[in-house]
Amino acid sequence: MDKKNPILKFGVPKGSLEDATEDLFARAGWKIYKHERNYFPEVNDSEMVLSLSRVQEIGGYVAAGILDAGISALDWLREMDLEDEVVQVCNLVYSKNSLRQSRWVLAVAGDSPYQKAEDLQGKRIATEVQHLSERYFAEKNVDVNIFYSWGATEAKVVEGLADGIVEVTETGTTIRAHGLRIIDEVMCSNPVLVANKKAWEDPAKRRKIEQLQLLLEGALRAESLVAIKMNVAKENLAKVEAMLPALNSPTVSPLQNGTWFSVETVVRTDVVRDLIPQLKEAGAEGIIEYTLNKVI
Image 1 (tube, rainbow, N blue to C red):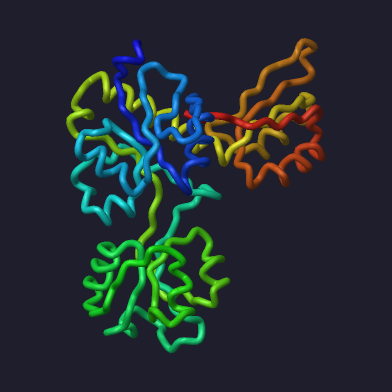
Image 2 (image 1 turned 30 degrees about the vertical axis):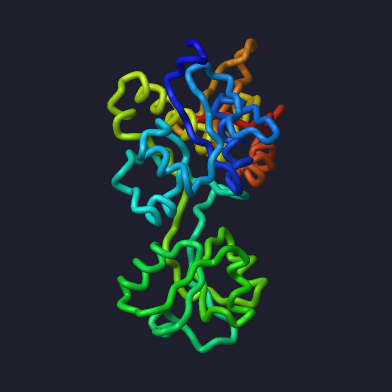
């Protein structure tokens, strides 16, 4: 495919999701090459051209057909009223530092009397997501004064500029570090693969978008899994097999002498550190653990 006539114009996030997105694409098979002061990185795929944009903007570019597809986020689609203006192909649950959703929360000073949203009737709320916050308070029939925060939103309460904030967090650590207390969750958000409606109807573009979906989802799924391989004597095989979780069932192959077997399976990363010593105790030998790029 000639780079002058690519199939897909694709938006990748710039900013807090930039490095995590680049790592995800690399595991999925796309190496992104960025250049200093350049918003059009290269990629090892002649069927795609990339545009580096703020995640807040990508949904709008896709809806308008400037981009065929891209990585947006649920919160910004809602904030910009774009939820029905693009095709939401799939959720991609990752964030800057983890594989968790981010949360927009309502927070107040730790020593304030406010315990719920209704307690903030008539108060000042600082946030980067005004429309989303307006919808949240309207659903609760709470009349507040919402104003836009250009940054350092947590400090607005500390400085006495606001009675509460609606702010995004992964763990709540930064909010607590500013002496604030979360009193409600406004919404959960995560990146989402979105497509322009006309692009989605184009067979070539849709094929490429679905390829991205398949491999990006596979790369995310692999993040929480590892593969382990071991040798097991015939007399210990049933005991070892019973200990092994798997996507389906372990792969068991006889070795040359017929009294030993090679056993291979996939397990969650949160259980493997406990599982390996147990397998060793059960008679497994030569245990190897290795990471996975994709699980389809």
